[in-house]
Image (spheres, one colour):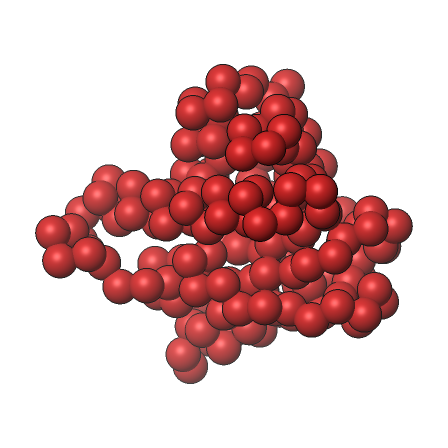
Length: 176
């Protein structure tokens, strides 16, 4: 499987948004970023798209899935601390270390399931800045992969190449 991991594009700032964070949309630069992300991934033979349920993640993938005519499937396991599944009973939501570990573990389980289901496919997922680094750290440690560059900018993409269930190679692509 080839997995493209996209951090959502630039969104309206939290301090300027007074509604539910789940429906906080992309701002104008983020909308342009989403088009540029689509342009960079359009020719990658992507067959499946999964997104955190947050509007900004779905909007980031909208131009791509529209161009290549595939649906976006909601993946609650890719949600951030507000849009993902609630904490397990043993975790303290005010303990950042436990919260990050929980988000990383649930997103890793999701990626493992994708690698099992879509062995010979290209898949794109979109998630958040507090989920992606923990997910990548867990993958890199588990599968002994050391990327040359590391980044997590809004609108950036990681190309992860799997050999069966194991991560084989990882490459960071800065945001457009």
